[in-house]
Amino acid sequence: MTADRVVSIIIPTLATAERSKYLLRAIESALSQQGVQAIPIVIANGGHGDAGLLDHLRQRRDIRYARLEQASQPMAMKAGRDMVDTPFFSILDDDDLLLPHAMSTRLGGMQSGPEIDVVVTNGIISNRWIETVNITDFSGILVDPLRKLQEKNWMLTGSGLFRTATMSREFFGDMPQYLEWTYLAMRISLEKRKILFINNPSVVHFLDHDFSIYRSKQAVFGQPRAIERILELDLPRDVRVNFEIRLADANNEASKLYLRGCNFPSALSSHIKTVRCRSGWRHLFYIKDFRKKGLAFFRKYSSAVTREIAETLQDK
Image (cartoon, rainbow, N blue to C red):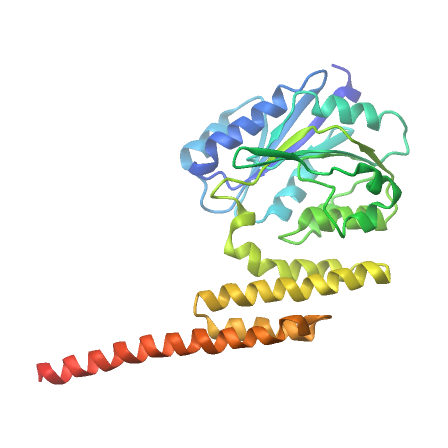
């Protein structure tokens, strides 16, 4: 295989036992690419990796492997980018799946012109046995990629191919912990990197795994900071306004989740942040939920305390 047909595929992973079979499937989907030699670069990160799985990855000779102590998707991607020594590279989630033609399709697009920095294909979203195409109106992306991001992220994880010479490590090290692909797509668009879009699904992105980070409480709590990171970019006014409104919604979702867990100080703090955001007034009357939840918690807590005092006095 000639050098221009060799592609690195970075696969960040927590390498936990529950992810094991999906990670091995992702690696196999990379190794079995048609017409391209793919080199998986597996970056295990975090301190909860399964010992048997880590040992298996360490001993494999058909992948490259590294380990990071800190659990961080952006840091793992940056570490993987540092290991790339091929002209092009891609990134794949450890529970997603490349279709057999993925890299050859993207590489064909990339090699159509030296000015192309990134190739982005469509993708398939799989959610509890229901599969849908990520982007149904691809024409809108071609007209205005940046503003299309306000509707939906067209850079689905695993859908891109990057030119190593022009997509430096800084693009990946500066990504937030959540909404990282929206952030990356924003930066690429704002910094005028040349993007070629191909309306051909080449990756399957799974949303139905119980261990998915995006289904976690941490993702809800982390979204406001991720949007704040997006707002640090030099955005056009209309795009900025859109994300300022989204920041209010994200803070409100965090507040509701804190409230459900009876974490009243954090819930109130997030609510105050909400109403201070653009259009945050839409969530102003959500404060009544604090009263309901607070009264219910107080009644439950006070009756339990009263019971405990009565039992103590009775024992005496």
